Image 1 (cartoon, rainbow, N blue to C red):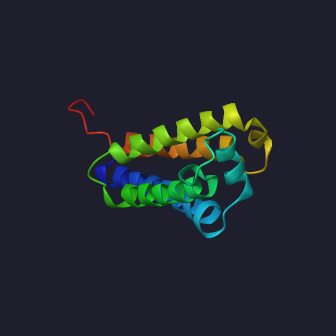
Image 2: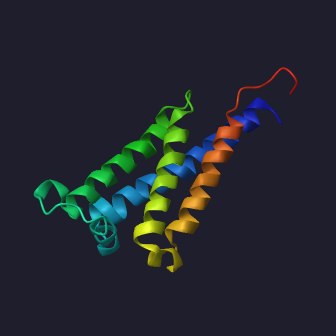
Length: 135
């Protein structure tokens, strides 16, 4: 496969992955705070203090997701945003599985979304791998 084709594949994977993070940051956390988001954060049993308000944590998480989406698009010469995205996806999926497992059977659930996004991380990672002398 040519370097140009690999670069196109990597860009498409990053673009789709960034869209996932930006949308999931904006829609259910910043623009229209989802009751499911608030409930998932509330399941952690955080202290009853303004700094630990589930609504605030959701919005901060939303900003972080949007920033990660932007990083995936703008920091293309480095692969670390892909590692961060994969780690976030795994940690959040584990969090849902442990604290809100009922969400794993809902339509467009975190399991299917996160697995697809993890596949995008892998595609971009592999497409951006440095060429070896034997290739």
